[in-house]
Length: 594
Image 1 (tube, rainbow, N blue to C red):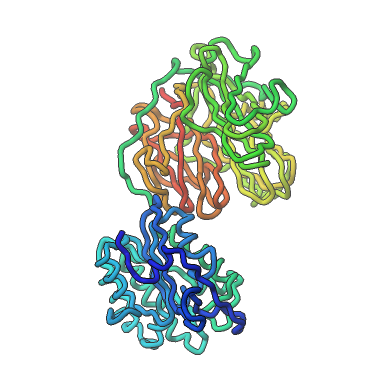
Image 2: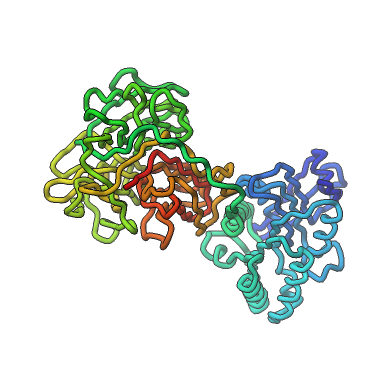
């Protein structure tokens, strides 16, 4: 990458840049001293080059004095872009920079052409210009369009441009309005041009500004993060770069489900062998609780009090596990359900990547010949309860379809008053079990197979006040589908193109992957959301209309998993919808056949 502006070479040689901050209406003065230059030599431009490649690709960033603070105050905009997964990054911002025409070194076109001649031509471009250009054009939208298009034409086809709207002193608001209108028009007309409503962000984000244009240091830190996030949400998308992952071979005959009274099988906080060290494997012996002929089990697995971030992976003992079941962070209890085959010795093993206590609750068994219940997926997942509308209660009685001996449900906790747990059981029983662990105010989901009571109900209890959402994904009963267990296997991972999609799933984007063979009508597995750009969710569903439900929820930068059982489309394909930008993983544990 042959980029040779003097300022870039200076940064690479490691000369120290000393920022000059002056109390001019508490705003950042757009200039800097360079230690080995005369003390009065002000630099009104900043160049940054971050050469490390990122999975989302290279980015060119160019802007005027509005952007300069994002290059002077750390973490800079290039730092934040790199943290989101972009790179290499070339950044230049300076006082007086403008859009077009491309006449001299203060214009974007001049720099695009110069960098291109030196071998730098990133497909992704951020242009933060308009404060100076709008002063030239005044309230003339046509003039604004011409100057913006001067840049678009130099950048050329095969590139994507992201261009924030501008703010100016209210005296010059007609000029800013015309410029922003031109940006909005071009974003509506072109699929390679994107804009961002910076005026709305400035008005609502608590920024400090004296001239409605520049910010204080804290404001630039916040703006750099918001810009990197908004840019990633606009341009970060997955493309199909390969084929589907190979399907795992089944490990046992097809089975039908036997609902069991939920029971805690092991809790290493109290039971031998005790707390699990990093990298250990815990065999789970079900102690005569399983019917004869059981070849797979439905269990809920919890990491309690982990000392570091990590994951749990449950699978048949004696086999490597190419999947994960639960993701957790330090000192935060997390749980997830899984359906997993038994090993040859009739046990399940739980591997942990970080020191933690492990809890396992048994929900049901899959039996090859005498299993009593088949599974019927819904054509579209159905919301049974949402206490945000009906009102909170620490115990909720949920009506279930009368033909169901058990139900497959997704349980979401929203806005809890404090940390706690949720459990779902038949209303006629109680037990020392749990399904979802949550922290205050977060949204987190877990799934469960729950036997129904004779009154066709299940009961959902929470240990602390919170809103609860219950979504029905299918029912167990007469007829229905049989389960084919398989070793837990990864079918989708946008981080490394498993399943054919990379480099990251976009906001509002749906990807489809093969997760079961032709003839299968439903699938069971674990869906994981990894480091979303903001709080959000994934929806896994039979390809078709998007259901009004969610499958897994995660806060910004977290990694959270949830089991799901849902219908699949013809050819065994599953669709996964994301909101917002995130990495998405799916591990199959089995499928359902007639």
